[in-house]
Image (tube, rainbow, N blue to C red):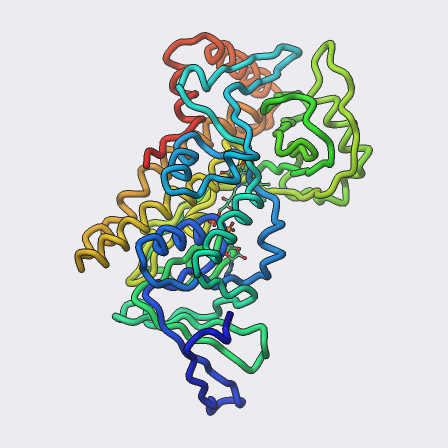
Length: 419
Ligand code: RFL
């Protein structure tokens, strides 16, 4: 809580703005998976940090997004004592299914890669992490958007946040390091001068209508349906909620999709012979996602280090975004802890170069997956579509045989990150 911080209040000269000041070792922007994992790891080592979050606690705790957690991330969570909720309510998955031209291809990736995914919705992960961080004495300033980062190349940078108490009050946090874990729309990335970093990006020209439905999954696994009308996916979340996806034009809008149209299209694209129609239920979210990927290099500037979606976004095709965010924060925490234990910035200076190979390998996998499950990535010429559809079939047949192709897929799918 603000009141518990050791502030000095001053009357600012401009427009009577009150500036409250405090200081810490590490200021973390964003209480998403990246910021919370970093906070928890620093807290464990007794390193002072404050998390500032633009939204309210209710808002971040109810934001439904990811659901698939990689095998190694689960091991990481267990090793660090963050996994109680996941161990109680998460569900392991070891098989996924592709559907194409009426055929079903079951891929037992868990057996092939000796690992499993866990289904545990992101909002539960965030709730668990917030609860743990606060119960151990950690400070999260909700509804405090960071509005400016100053002195990034100095020894004591400053984060300025606006305050929920009054529009005339600002909070300045002076610190040693700033962790930009504020997602794709935060201010960290844009605070890095343009000539100090490169942005690599790819637009796939594809949209997904992302749907959350209040229905149990009829299929107890991820199903990717490669249909002539476009991709459709079913991703289990909880016993009451299922996520579905429908390929659509990237500039489509959710208002074009009535509930009836959604269910009809899902039934058409997902079902194969012998399937019953999907059980219908209320659609609690419909939004169009534009399939795109972005990576910033390097992921650091001066005393600012980016982690998670602030540094890179990846299409949701391979269910990797939250996993990458947690892996970044693990590496960043190790580098910061190393600094405070040894007064040595070597690992901090290597943070980007250590993380980028994993991020690019994951982007490569996502790019491969996107080409497998969509027929429109490279061309929409009919002749090409027919040819590339046969290529998709050949890929699925290779995946189903337990050779090196299937092993490579399984290892990529379950995840690279080894904490
Ligand atoms: P987040 O989760 O966006 O959190 C960033 C936080 O920063 C706050 N913020 C600020 N705070 C202070 N000051 C400011 N100026 C701020 N600006 C922003 C925001 O309010 C927010 O709370 O980023 P983080 O921590 O890097 O985590 C990334 C993941 O959330 C993201 O990659 C995943 O959700 C992606 N994703 C999936 N990832 C998976 O690993 N597996 C999946 O199955 C999966 N499915 C998905 C997904 C993303 C989706 N959407 C909506 C894009 C499914 C969907 C539909």
